[in-house]
Amino acid sequence: MTTAHVRAHGGRAERNGRAWKLVWPDGENQENVMFTPRDAAAVPPAKYLGLKDFRIRRLMTQLPPFLPGQPTPILWLPDLPEEVRGFWSLWKIAIYTTDRSWNRQRVIPLFLHDDGRCLLPTARYIWDQLLSGTGGELRGYLKGSEAIGAYERLREAIERQGRAVYEELVRVHREFLNREREKGTYAFEVRRKAIMWLGLPAVRAYRLAKLEEEENEWREQLEKKAEVMPELVPLLVVRVRGGSR
Image (cartoon, rainbow, N blue to C red; front, top):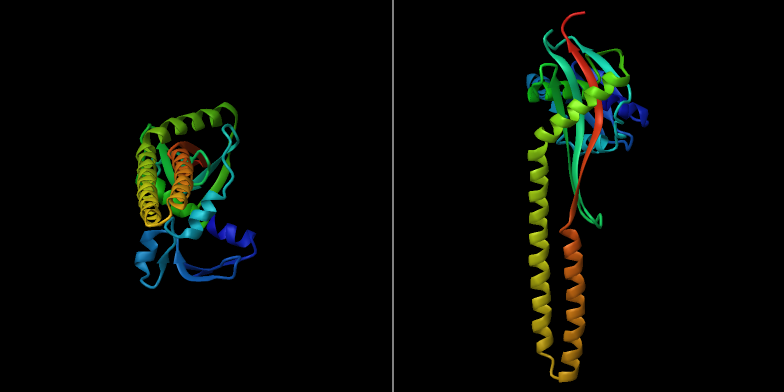
């Protein structure tokens, strides 16, 4: 996925042994990168390129949403055990203030086994494989009611599994509001004290009135920032099969 994106946008992705050399479309070079922590640990000079890298996060947020019911790729991954069969998906969980002045988002993978289990390590492993664009083979597509049913099951699973991520985003927003409130309250108090030192009563009264108007407007804006809207967006859905051919 990463290598295909780089090439599609005018960059270069070259395999050098087990590692990759990437030349991003803006000209930045990254050498000795790998897409799985295990591979990077096995080759000390190599660097693991995952979701902590801002370029990978940006790539994910630029993906168009996956539409419920659209054909679902069937991917064979020979490195996975035969018993690993299910649906892998990638989701964006986000919250926005109603005025769109503040937002935070997370991109998380989910693997739902055919037996109903959500397997986080498997989700991450498949994610690493897709990032590198190696090791898998497309075996067709699921369509119609089968694809719709798979999406509905994944949606139910991510609503459960993603709750902790959503709550973390809400906590980050709450901390942001507290900081904004404290900074604003302090700034207005400092300005109010400075105005009180003015000698002419008429000038002082005028300045205090203007400050009060400005503070009221600031409080109204802060109230708007206190209201957030959640967003849950499917980015990718793939049917995964492991084992030999």
